[in-house]
Length: 377
Image (cartoon, one colour):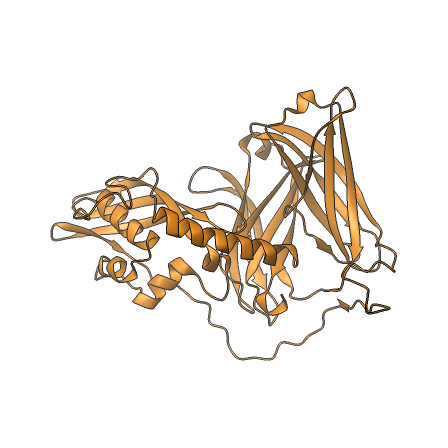
């Protein structure tokens, strides 16, 4: 992932820039006039219209107009408000664009309103959805959003002792390349595999272990075969795996086959590729307060906190979770990105979704965290 993710970020960021230039904003499923289709902005005489106007300005990055539309009782200053939307410290939010939004009212009175909005972000690692509850108040005949202060973790000056393990790759000649060819590949093994059908297609999932005493860069490939022995499709785990495995470390993997019906598959071929790479056990990210819960939209999720126990900033964190039934079988693998940077000695919340038809079967789970730091790219 430390090699794959930078490439994804560069390509994805370029795509987002093109998208922003072409679309000019597109608020799907919103109330009022669609972004970019009108020469004027309607007055925010209702909570729905006021929130729509605010989000369109955010989408178009009209920060002055968006901030001026907030209630005077808001706690956030202008810089906090902008950073809340644009991210900081090289986080995933810094490389993202607001593609659309779907607001709905929760509670409205004559002077107060609670609105819930699903925010659809375009990012270099794919679409991400965020849900926020926004409080609005009526000031005169205009409704305005009350914006809370964006809390930036305070990182005190301190010395963090470095005690982590590290493996360097010393090449024999100048011709040797990354993933050295003159050294035996690390011993890795697939320890479980499960194929399931979903509405989106077939999914092959399981776990891989690095049985060696050296780190390995791993990738899992799978081929679906029909009754005649012909390949139907072949796919790779791509980013749904912790690519860099330290010695004895286990990672989940998941391979998606869109629009493939597993009932038409006779056999599943699967193999794992491994290469020797340099690696270190730092930065250390602790996974805290994990629990199965239901989010604001009624979806089953595994949520918790990621704690950066090191002295380095982790710009992008990627959570991958494997879920087991009461027999220890992997019944689902889910992943999700944290769009805020993990500052040293600071934490950020995470949540990964579990399908409703799987959540009742979950007896246990295992979480790994992939990370990307600009300073180490």
